[in-house]
Image (cartoon, rainbow, N blue to C red; front, side, top):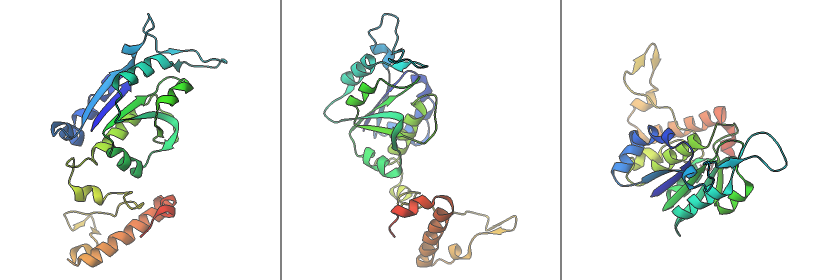
Length: 224
């Protein structure tokens, strides 16, 4: 997979993309990640990429030209273009799975007061990672890349990804390790039984219990 990210602050990605699973996936050749400063594509003599909004209002709006030109220089027939924006569809695991099957992702990070609406014409999807406001789209883009990269074949063990939260619209079951008793708190006896059928039943019941408690909205889409 190839991922190209458009950002005004490319240095923000340095630490995130050089550690842990993403680093190993890059070293294995599973993913290629490139960061592009779309300020390099502006035709403005002063290097501007934004301007005041028509109709008045506070803040500055990102202009079409630098982003259009940057995307056009990168896109191919395999490209899928994503705009990170608070007005996008809520991001969830099923979207991460779908995106992990794409050959080439182009992710556009916003900043300032927003985008010229015409930029949407070159995008295939708008994505939001939550109902809150961030300084820009860089951190949301990092979330996408992390969640997608770990789903690529060979990035992590397949059984690790299959047993994670949200894969069946349920939160993950509780897990324990040594010691068996810590400050009076004991590991559930069923996990020590060696009976895998009972263990699986316990874990599913715990998934449902945790989901009812913390994310009851997920149960609407759950199918046992």
